[in-house]
Length: 168
Picture 1 (tube, helix red, strand yellow):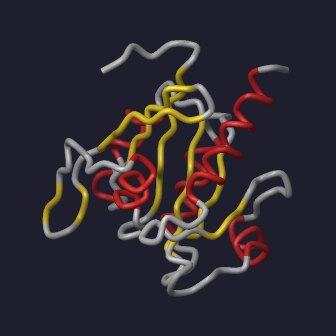
Picture 2 (tube, rainbow, N blue to C red):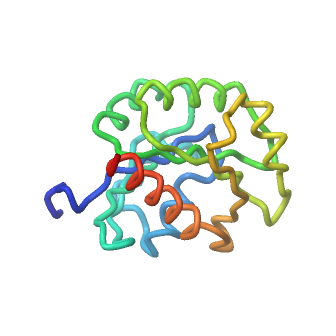
């Protein structure tokens, strides 16, 4: 594994149970996660991959979504440069999503919202913004990890937000 440097970014994908975090990270990287800890199809560990994007080495972590593993969220968030909150479009905005927004905002890092599973149901970004009480500067986009729809685009926009914050 390469050393984390100024040319690398740590990005964490958070989301409620079954939002598609593992698939999201695997599709972005084009590889299966190495430390895939699962029990009855619930991720029980944090998994990661490294990808190259915009001349950065991205350390991309997938967090467990079940509340019983929320103690891992803080470990993952330590030192993160940005975050992605993955919503399950087939379920809508959940209490865990509200909890995760509050959690991510404590770290004062750029983040985006990805409403996943658009191949089944596409969520209205303004509905999400209203439900999660988000400001207009938070990017919300629909994705399908299963079909590779809009994954790279949203990651690029998050990297741009991180760069803007770091260059000020």
